[in-house]
Length: 393
Image (tube, rainbow, N blue to C red; front, side, top):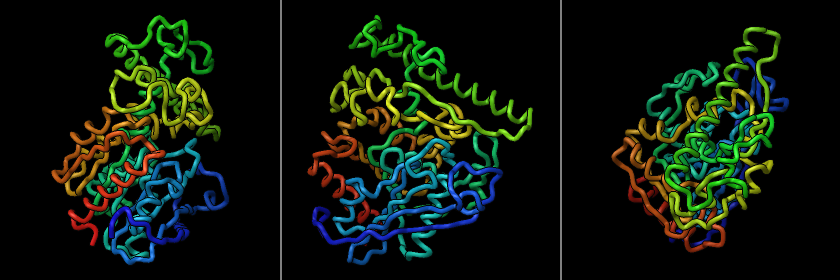
C-alpha cells in the first residue's frame, strides 16, 4: 500500500491500570491516591491487519489529534498514541515515572494486543523520552530519581522496542529549556528585576542582532547559570524539608520568562529554514511570559527530574550512547521552528548503534502546518525504513 493512500480507520480507547506504591502521589484524582496508576491512550486502527504498531508518547502531551499519527493511520499503519500519567499537565511530572509508563504500553501492545513488532516514534519532546526508554530497556541503570526518591527502572524489566524513530525532536526537556531560559532574570521572585545587558527583547538592551559570537557565548553561559541557581535553591529547600520533618515534602513554584533565545530574533545563529521572529508558540516576545511556556509551573522534584540542566536523567545524548542493539531512524525538519538545528547532529553522533540513519526534509516545520507534501515525505520515509529493517511486513 502506498504511504500516501488514505484508508479507513477507527479510534479505540486504551486504558491500562497497574499497582504502584509510593510515599506520596503527585497526580490529582481518586485512582492516583489509592495505589493504582491509570493510563489512557488511543489506538488508531485501520481495517487492514498488521503485526507492527507505531507507539507515540510525549511526556505530557496527548498526540492522537496531531497530523503525524493520523497520517500514519491514513497510510494503513497501526498506531498507539500513549498518554503518560501526566496528560496536559507537567507541573509535577517525574521523567523516571514517564519511562515506566511507556514500558506499560510496550508490554500491553505485545501481550494484550498481540503485536509482534513495536516501533517507538519519538516526536518533539517524545524523542529524548524514546531514547531514554530504549536505553533503560537495553541496559537498565536508574534506581532513584534525581531528588533521591526510590524509583527502580532496573526492577521494572522494561521490554526493548524493535526500532526507534526520532522525528522533529530535541536533545531533552532540560537542555532545551535551558537554551530558552531568559538569562536577564536576576531575581526569580521578581520577573521585573532584569539585567539589561542580557534582556534581548528590550529596546534598552545594548546588544542587537546580528549578535556577536562573544555575546552569544556570554548569553548561553548566563542561561546555564540561571538553571543551576534554580537547582541549588531546589536542593536547599528539599534539604530544609527533610531536616524539619513536619510533613511538607514538596512545593510548586513559578519559573518566569522561558522562551528567550538569540536564535529566535537572529536567524544567522544555528541557521535553518525557520521564519525569523517566530517560534512554534508564536511571537517569542509574547511566548516568553505566556502561561503555556515550558516549566512555567513546576514542583521541586519535577524541576530536578525534568528541567535541571545537570541533574535530569532523561537526556537524549545519554540515552543515545547506551543504545547499541536497536535500529534508529532520525528525521530532521530543516525549517523547524521549535527544535534547534544543532540538536539532531548531536544525537546522531551520540548514537552507539551502528544501525542508524538521518534523513532531512527541506522546508519542513515542526508541525508540518500547511505542508502536506512534507508530511507525505515523512510518512514515506518511516514506512520505507520500517520495511527495509524487517519491522513491517
